[in-house]
Amino acid sequence: MNTTPQTASDLSSQIAANIRDAIIKGVLIVDERLPSEAELSAQFNVSRATVREALKRLAAQSLIRTQRGATGGAFVNRISFEAAQAQQITTSTLLLSMNDVSFETACEARFALERACAPLSAARRQDSHLKAMQDALDTQSAPALSDAGFCAADVAFHRALVDAAGNPVLSYQLAGAVEAMQPLMNMITFTAWSRDAIVARHREIATAMTTRNAAAVAAGLTLLEQETQTLARTVFARRTKQPNAAP
Amino acid sequence: MNTTPQTASDLSSQIAANIRDAIIKGVLIVDERLPSEAELSAQFNVSRATVREALKRLAAQSLIRTQRGATGGAFVNRISFEAAQAQQITTSTLLLSMNDVSFETACEARFALERACAPLSAARRQDSHLKAMQDALDTQSAPALSDAGFCAADVAFHRALVDAAGNPVLSYQLAGAVEAMQPLMNMITFTAWSRDAIVARHREIATAMTTRNAAAVAAGLTLLEQETQTLARTVFARRTKQPNAAP
DNA sequence: TGCAAAATTAATGTCAGACATTTAAAGTTT
DNA sequence: AAACTTTAAATGTCTGACATTAATTTTGCA
Image 1 (cartoon, each protein chain N blue to C red):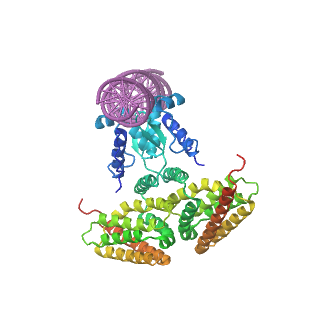
Image 2 (image 1 turned 90 degrees about the vertical axis):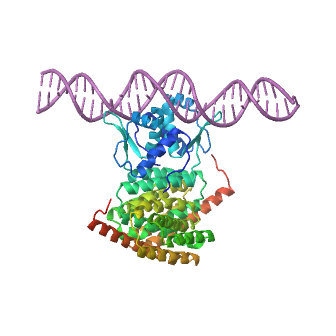
Image 3 (image 1 turned 135 degrees about the vertical axis):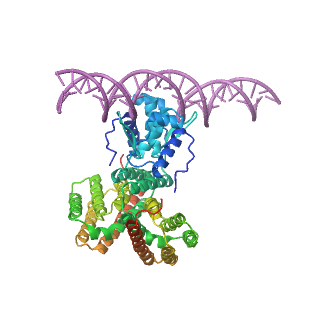
């Protein structure tokens, strides 16, 4: 397995890596208490400050949690899907914004992944998922909605679609892809016309979900992807011709 | 956006969250230097030790890097796909092992995602990808190979398939799904017969990739998924009947 | 003058020890 | 027995010092 082979010269990294490996290999199990900071500093022969820096690193990855008080200490954390998702979203968002990933590439990835859910979602969707999609649709249809609000409802719609697959692993993996697209989508100014087009596709997809028509869900997603790509190209092309509007 | 709404009572968490938000919102840009630890401790009115714990948290998420020496300091890091992948793999692996996700659920997610790549991979694959797949196949065909080795080659095969899609975002998102399955796969003891079956499916997929037959790639993956699920069910059923062998 | 060696400096990395705060458990009193 | 108090053990924070690193400046000599 890949056990972070980075040669970290500073002690706190080494200690963090050491404990991390113990957790990954199962030497330390969930909810087990680590030795106290004083004991760890004795074991590793470093100061308490150094141990603490190592523990903070692990806490940042949700690998441990700490508790104060008499029976407190550092405990191996059971990573929850929620915590993992939150981390993944942060990382994915920054990854896209910092590596000038093209809108095209990100969009393609997102819809490809979402189509992967279509068969499962169509088969397993509950009424709650249909309702969530309908609510998002209603929000998106409001004429006075801001662009940011429109995008947020868009995310809600697609997350409902993904969650309908009833597979938490799938939901987790896709959270990053769907949410990380939001800042890129926010760069687009949606005209009333383009909003109508998107909402129309969403409506088709929602209908297909209701009738459990997997192929139609996938087809709707493909159509939506094409229109989104076209829209983005148009917006970016116009912006290039006429570089900056008023600041 | 979701900006880690956790009410962290300790100062180092608050400071870390503060700086993290500044990076996410673009107040601090890539390669920009943060104030020195002494300056930060003055700004936030805390000791240097506390600031350092905050910085270590950010470093653990690859948000910053630090450099020693006269012109050193903490710099906003450009998160690389590599670093993000490594983190995602660690998180995904622990997530699966700690939440007793069933083999079935994980397997379903993995193949669903992989099928999402099939059309793109078939269309864009280069000779290098075919070669990587072929190499993995050759490795898997060796009769004296250990189970762990067989699984490692399996991962290599599927990663080549994913990378062939030529979409770095897709590769990043799927890295977690593919790699995190490995420990679960390692729980299975592959008989010679089941290995042959898997290799045969892989061969079909490789052939379909060569001829750029997207539908055949997807079909091959579906077949492989079904066989893997059946195999796992068999193995686990036998293990339940006859709980522990020699330790 | 030009260049190499040495000193300077500014930053992070580490240490030691102290005190503050939190929390559970043990002890005490009514 | 219940409520209160004390104790102890742990993390959280602060202070000040020294070690180490690496860029920059100064010095010294050919």
